[in-house]
Image 1 (cartoon, rainbow, N blue to C red):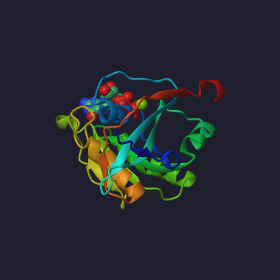
Image 2 (image 1 turned 60 degrees about the horizontal axis):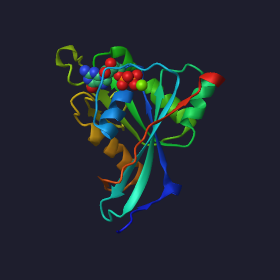
Image 3 (image 1 turned 180 degrees about the horizontal axis):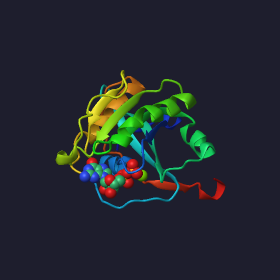
Image 4 (image 1 turned 60 degrees about the vertical axis):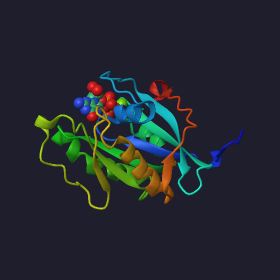
Length: 193
Ligand SMILES: Nc1nc2c(ncn2[C@@H]2O[C@H](COP(=O)(O)OP(=O)(O)O)[C@@H](O)[C@H]2O)c(=O)[nH]1
Ligand SMILES: [Mg+2]
């Protein structure tokens, strides 16, 4: 059997940031596990999920991403500084039905950039399925970032959002691979914040 090469030295860290309740965890669940639920987790910590992609030009070349999703919002600076360490790119999520979460997008990007200068950013305007509540701010709040309307519920643009970010990070055309082993690990930081 032909084995695929996974380059472990190049595990690229992607963080999900944005206000609590905007759908960060749901986007990861939809993307990686193809599932959606309405459970709301509030334990402080980080969910870490590996995700493998392949280079389009040479599908035997596997690139390993690791998705870092803060569970529960931590207001502790020390926790957040550690959260950002080594980040290669970020998916910044806001909720189309929450003007507050939209206004905070710039704040999240500024915080990210204060820890890791100018890493690629993709903005996800999430919950697009809730049509009647959509407010008129589906325009990019910050210039120069890719901005996609997503729904973790209906799977609208979820793959596109992650792959746009992955391709910005690697500067390569990427495709999915069937060699996933995407178990989510929860790391609780409660004891030391
Ligand atoms: N209708 C709808 N609800 C969503 C969507 N994404 C997340 N939710 C719901 O919004 C709530 C918060 O989602 P969650 O992923 O926990 O947000 P997080 O705090 O950013 O991780 C949950 O009840 C989800 O089911 C979406 O695209 N559409
Ligand atoms: Mg979450």
